[in-house]
Amino acid sequence: MPYQFEDLKKHCPTEWRDYIEHSFVRQLGNASLAAEAFQHYLKQDYLFLIQFARAFALAAYKSPTLSDLRQAKDGLQAILDTELDLHIQYCNEWGISEDELANLPEARATLAYTRYVLDTGNRGDLLDLHVALSPCIVGYGEIANWLNDRADTIRGEANPYDAWISMYESDEFQDAMQAEIRWLDERLADVSPARFEQLTRIFRDATRLEIDFWDMGLNLSD
Image (cartoon, rainbow, N blue to C red; front, side, top):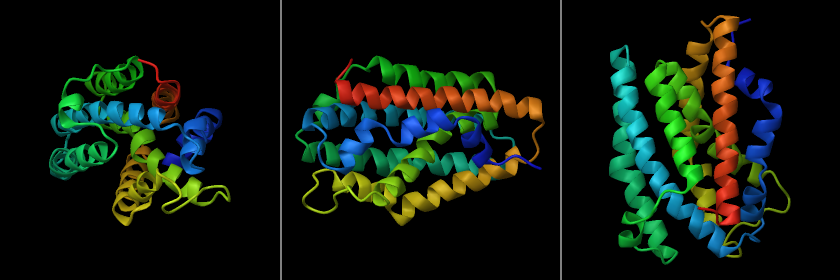
């Protein structure tokens, strides 16, 4: 049977569950998350997006086909022209100025995950890079869906983090998530068992680093 993205998750069930169902996520959903923890996460997520843009630029360089090149270009353009501006506006709503964002130091968890993604992409091929990015691209969409399936998730004005959930449950993000899964499924279908094991290690490590990113926000660690 050909491999699919779901097989990566099945080979890392504990890590994926700990990421999707992290205490940061649970508290965000039930509105009990400390505002300081969310603000710390928002600041570091801005720095993460900058490195994410670099990863899409690397994806363009690694692209073997015109279709892959266009996909990388669209991803880079979306971050630079839309997502970063929206993130800055959202941070402003939480009392975080653009000047503050511009002078932030990167937390160790931010450094670890983003540099791991870039290093993986530099050492490997385009599939390695996409697998390293997939816990973010796919995971945030799954987290929004998981929260919406929970009885204790609070929606609307009673939850100050409702806009965050709305962002990742949106049709735009869910469509992007499904497009990424389809891209991965097409490439994974052709890999050997040995190659799949290599990709599983990348996926597991990236997911562990995403868990550390939640820990960083929850614990206000630098």
